[in-house]
Each structure stands twice: as C-alpha cells, then as structure tokens.
Image (cartoon, rainbow, N blue to C red; front, top):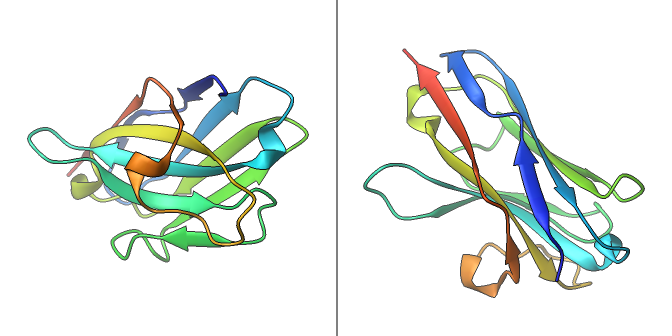
Length: 126
C-alpha cells in the first residue's frame, strides 16, 4: 500500500479555481491507478475523477467534466486535481485514493481502491 497526503484545499468564491495535490509514498507509485472522490455533509462519497497508472487514460464524473482536470507526475509521486469554474455544490471534503492496477481504464468504484488519504476541505462560497 501507499500512504497518501492531500493538500491544496481552501475557501474560494464561485467561479474560482483550486489545485489539489496528493503526494504518495513508496517506490511503486507508477503501478497505481489514482482517483479523487468527495463527500459533502449528509451525502455519500462520490467519484470525481480517475487516472490510470501511466496518465494515459482519465475518467470524470459528469458533474465535473469540462471543469476539472486530473493529472499525475510519476517522478514526483503526485496526482493533481485542477478545479476551475467552481460552484457551491462542489463544496466537500476531497479524498485521493490509490488502487494497485495497470489496467488502461481508471476505476470509479471507491470500494476497489486500496489506500486513502485523510482528505482536504474545499469550500466554494456563492
């Protein structure tokens, strides 16, 4: 398993941008597919974006498509989530997750991920 630490959350006005980072420990980061999930108060955790081990395949929830971009740097052992045109409904705790997989297609089912970070709060004011 890898250890994951998120950063970059904060308070932003609607229409603004934030960039989340997730730093992973371990030497096998490039063997892991990565995902971003979020959970708003009183709601279930939901998939936001996923990226395969190489960065060659990405997948987004419909609610963020065209606004958010997931990327990774396998040299820095880091995955990113660039969030633009933020809306109040994007307010949530954002978690990154890792799944040991070299499949081409990233996974959107949270239960299939092996490791999770502690989360970072994103608050979008109207």
